[in-house]
Length: 352
Image (tube, rainbow, N blue to C red; front, side):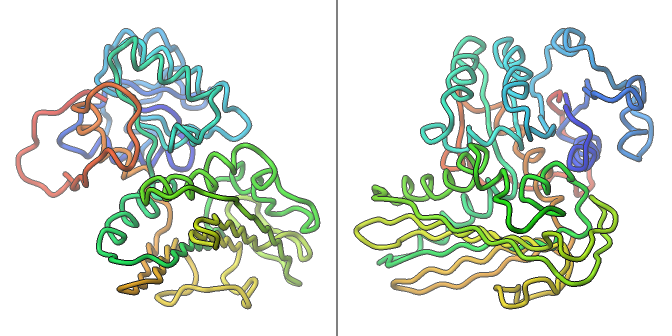
């Protein structure tokens, strides 16, 4: 079952439909314009025979192997938790790109963590929060690099995105885009940011076996003196927030040991004094990893087409999550899983 047909959900639905290891059996939508439509019509592909619905009881009755949750949780964390609990309790596994408190359960808001853990126990089901970040970039990818280090002095991770073509309006508003640069944005001030960005540092420290002494944070917002045409807002006027930077440092062993920087721009030329990608300018998502120690490592990964990796990683994880022991899984629990859309004879699938 696929749930949530926003900007990322449509990409994820297309991946499910095309994956020979998966069988789409249900689709949840919230909008009247999509209810009753064929999933193929929504994804922009051939008809599937699966019709979109808002009826949760109908979807529960399908007894699917897995629910892939793509819906936004911006301003609706309680609702998002409540939506998946009946499926977990009924034995349907869940892969989510949205429940950030479950990235590393020990560091998430227990109001959301505890009910999901309990539902997994009742239904004998598994849950995984994944995506590009949080998830792969500063989870599995970073952990693989750190496994090659003999002596670690410090690690710095940087995420940079040109979000001019990104359609996730609610998400960008959380970062303060198209707002007053002098106003502290919700992402920096709320539990959402702590569950995402600060928990990422805590999860890295857990992987390294380090205790965090304290965490320091700094937020910067910058405007430009020209208008910007964007997918999310239309024209953003000069003087409105056009670039944001969030720097978080975890102090361990008496020094800043793990550092996280997130730089988002509505235009690639905004905030030129901040760090920029080496591989490309303009559209896309870039992750950089710098490891100080023996040996030293510098790595940059650029995705020119941006955030499509987030739903794809979730979809690729479905067969593994279905085969995993019951409970909440983290990036430290899961193996690398390959793509399955490369032609040949379709494998017998699991229902999603």
